[in-house]
Image (tube, rainbow, N blue to C red; front, side, top):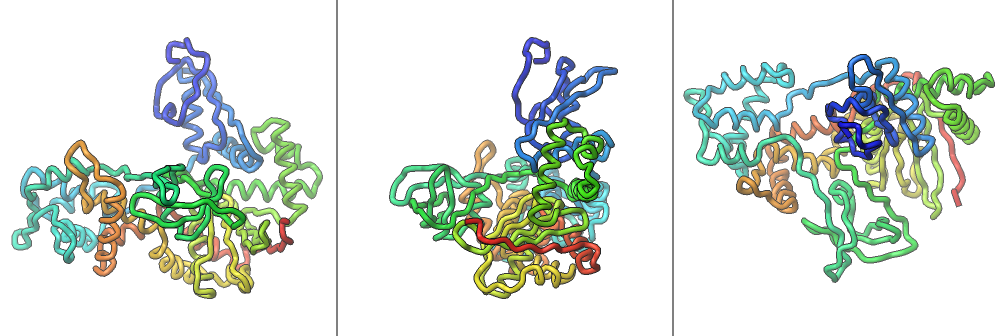
Length: 487
C-alpha cells in the first residue's frame, strides 16, 4: 500500500494512527466516525504529501447514521473539533505512580505531591485526597488492603517493600482488562457464544435474551461463565458488545439538534431538500433521504431538536408498555438520564425496570400502572437528578465494573508473575470482595475515583443537569406523544 502497488485496503481504525502513506488518494469511512476529531484523523491519511488535499467519503448504512455523518462532515469543514479535556485527579493512576516513584528507594511524601502536581491532570489535586491515597497504598485504611509501600509517618517518607518493584512492573499501565463471558448450554459443556462483560453485569437469572437467531433464558451466572437454556415466546433483551465504544459528544448532539431546528423551519417553508444540500456536504440522494426522514418524523410526532425533548409512550409487539425519551445529545447524557429514570421508577414501584440507552435516547420497559412519566421528567430538577443518580450509580453494574478496573490500575488487584495474567473471573471475585470492604471505609480513594469516572468520563452529568435545568426553566420543551400497540 505504501509503495502504491495495492489499489485499496480494507482496515480497522488502526490505520488512522499517524501512519504516513503518501500514495493513499481517498479514505472511505463506513458508518459515522462518531467524532469530528476521529473523522479528521482518518481522512488525513489521504493526500499525506506537501501541498496535497486530503479527500474522504463517509458511506452511511441508515438514515440515522446519515444524519450524524452529514453533521460531522459539516463540522469538519468548519474546523469545529471537540474540546480536549484533561482527566481531573484520577486517583487510581495517582496510586500507581506513588508506588512507582518509591521503587528506587525512600522518597519524601511532600516531594511526590510536588512532582505529581506538575501534571495538568493533578495540578488542582487536594492535599487531603493525596494523603488518603498514600495511606491506602501503605495499607492504613483497614483490613483487606495489602500494603504496596511502607509509610514512615515520623520522617514523612515512603519506602518500597520487597514486592513493590515486581508489582509495578507486572501490573502497571492504564489500559483496562476487559473480557467476555462464555455462554454454555445448561447441563452440558457446549459453548454457544460469548456476551459482553457489562451486559452480563446488568443481566439477572431468569431473564431472556437473543443470541444469534434463538432466544435463551439465563439459568445461572457464575464467576467465569453463564448457563442458559432455550426458550420461546417471551420478551427478550438484545445483547450488546460495548467494549470501549465512543459515544456521540454533547457538542455534536447540539449541532445535530440545531440542524433539525433549521430543517423544521424549512420544511414549513417548502424548500427543505434544497436547504439541506446548501447546509450539508451531501449528495442529492442523501439530501432527499434526510428530507424524507424529517417528513416522516414530523408526520408521526415532534422532532427532537436542540430545544425539544421528545417523550413517546407506546406498546411493543407483546403489548407491554415502553417509554422512549429522545434527544440528540448523545449516549453519555442518555446513560445518566437512564440511571436517574430507573431509580425514580424504583422508588415508585419497588423494582428496577429493564432499560437501555443509546446515542439517540433512552428506552425503558414500563411496569403496569406507572404514573405519568413525562411528569416525572418535569419534576426531575438538577438537584434531584444528582441525588437519584448517585444512589442509582452505586447499585449499577457500571460502578462494579469500573471499580474493578480502577482497583487493578491502583495495584490493589496485582496480576500474576511477570509475563502471566490472572484469569478475569478471579479478578472479578477479588474486586467484589474488595468493593464490599471499600464501601465500609469512609473516603476510600478508589470508590471516590470510580464515582468521579462514572459521572465525568463515562457519563456527562453536568450537561444532563444543564438540560434538566432548561426543562425547569421552560427553554427546553418536553413534547409528549402516545402511540397504540405496534401490533
